Length: 66
Image (cartoon, rainbow, N blue to C red):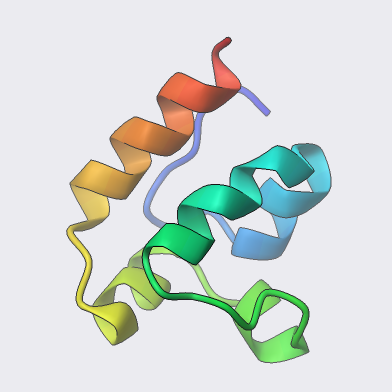
């Protein structure tokens, strides 16, 4: 995965790099196994969980660039 964006689907991120799950857990998203959460975009999940989308994108993209 080259770059994670607001509209990137969480399931696609987890499939490409399962170690990104920690960042979703940190934002309070503990239901990563359920089909609904895997089908959400990063922006949708951030809206539901009250998290700054730019902050999580920065963390995720820094992580996958390692």
